[in-house]
Length: 421
Image (cartoon, rainbow, N blue to C red; front, side, top):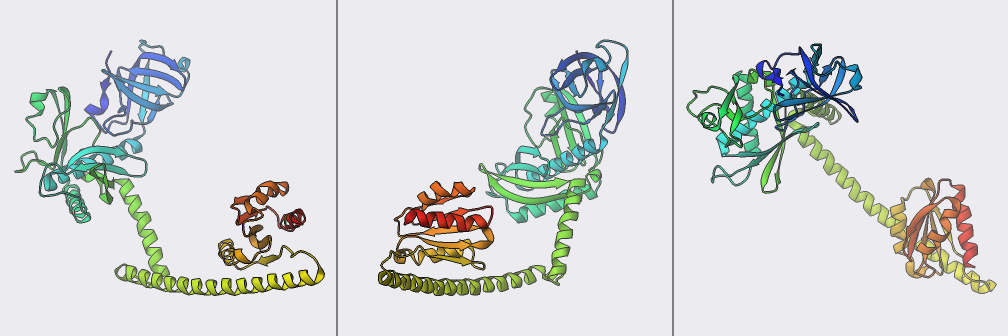
């Protein structure tokens, strides 16, 4: 049982008919093989084709031996019987196919130029939903030990020149390794028979074509159909260099999005492309200066507030002695200072707190409990905050309790105050 792969004969064919050879009901639908298939199966770093068969969505396409298996989103009884003469119509999702063609050929061109210019060997290729990656190993030229951004820019320019030249793309099929190895291959073959070699550019060029490598994927007839290639990033990865890139329509749409952001940023900063970075840096410098000034002011406020609370604690101690009572657990409310500010305030007060000090951040309904370690603030929060639907935690000297409503804050403080008397 074998499948004639129509995409090998004409990569631009969008609709065809075929007979069902086998049919099997599976969990997600029906698995069928056809005598003739439009659909490229997943492989070589490329996702499978999408589309419909007999009007039903094709969910997945895989190959095994000489057959192509299609997972169709329908019950088995909705399709003709296997082995019958009744044909089903196959319709390709062309946008998805062409997207794959553009991206896959873009990878070929980039890999070929890395090999030619720097001896870079493609050791891994992935076509993800958000970007493509190529893992380049610099094992072919001892003059280079790393891929720099300048090298990426150089490769990117040469790759787009291949596109602008409308370099032809040809696929050659060979039955044996010996026949295929007569080609100017970028990479050693990994199998011995039924070999497809994809070549980009002039086969008779002095240094060989722009790329020539074994590949089973689908590609356009000329490099011009890729449209554009853009490299976005290069980083080290497992002793190699991972190149992030896009090609075709995806590269163009990403460029549009990035340009729109750049243009809006320029408008906000009253800058053009030529001075945008300078204006941005000037704005960052102002922001840094403002943050430093704000930090100084915050610190002064915290220290001043710490002095005020210490004085309040001392005043209460004096009153307690004269009235014959124990010191109160004082509470202070804040609207402007943040919870982090209150934590810093607490650090200034640990040695001055008789029992527990409550610092309340009203906007977030947060109570910060502070003590010298006895009583244990974290234990108080753990045992009591949940009574009012609160949550939180902390250590012996500082813990926080957060509530859904402001009314629970005062009730919680009153509970703890009574508990400690």
